[in-house]
Image 1 (cartoon, rainbow, N blue to C red):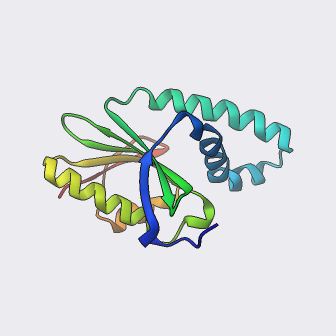
Image 2 (spheres, one colour):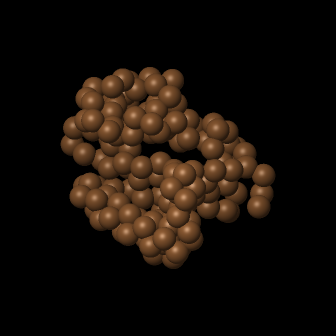
Image 3 (cartoon, rainbow, N blue to C red):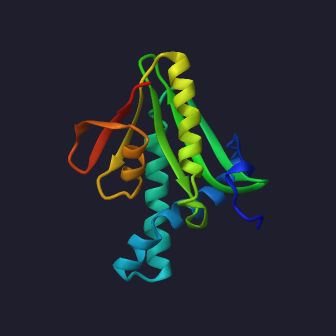
Length: 159
């Protein structure tokens, strides 16, 4: 794999052929949680497959979505899903493989979304689970908590 560099990051539309990578990415984002449960590989696979399908179904409820694969050079390292609504830009999901996290890539991509939201004169919103380490990143980038839904915060950025 090419060394990961924010200067080599690009986006391309997600395609049907990306399903295996997207499942690998989903599994990677839940690896720490799965390890804590002590399940064997078959149990993890069954559970994650069910959760992956349920999550994808829930994402289909968002209108006007743009689903992108995040590339480092030509290698997929993540995904970003945004929804353009009349009253907001919603960051539905952004995820990176473990080896790509903590290198400024998420911040760079979100900064690009800020430019788009500002041009559209719309707030940018997202939900984040309270225990997700990305919560701190979103705070640093200027998102404010506008609602506590119990397990998650609804956060908003206004340009």
